Length: 143
Length: 110
Image (cartoon, rainbow over all chains, first blue to last red):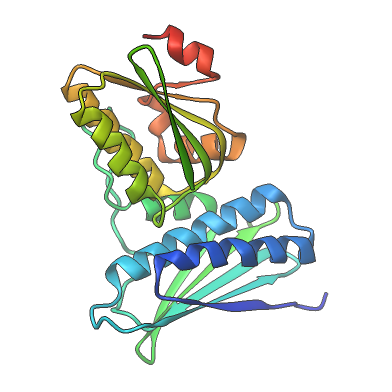
């Protein structure tokens, strides 16, 4: 099966979330992936992008975040790359979310959601860039 | 995202249209907290026309729910689309936030 990469860039501004949505819609039309999967991918990329914008930069300059999506035989691979501060979502400790409303703290909620929706998450820091790769398999069972 | 505000008696109703994410959640937070500081004790958020929510949206709803509870008030959440409800479930918020099927159920609960 030929690997078709779908890539795009977003500026470091939360208003770009609309662009992210638009790209996901186009991607969904091109690939025929289910609406549910497109929703979940949108959410995962949104959470990562929002974290990057919120915590990654302090120089007041515009940065570029690169996103690549590659469907393959096993499922869907996502890659998001930014040149912000080092941040590894794989090792980030999320708080216990199974709690009552009074106890509930919500640090790391976005990362919790990403971990629930994606099957694999890899991080590497390379040439002053954060590179996060995620994978979602077609079937629930993983090899 | 568009927010339509209505009132049924003392109940403040917020109808959301579009997407609640980190870009749009601040505006919604302001409206909710304005209503709380104006003394609202009964609020309903109608999710019927909300197509998408991220953790930023969940966070705003949680904050507002805690704040109104401190004032002995309550927020009901109704008419969620399937994918939106799933985000609450993934976060575990469905175990302690009052989510009901429709507006009638929300109004009746007060």
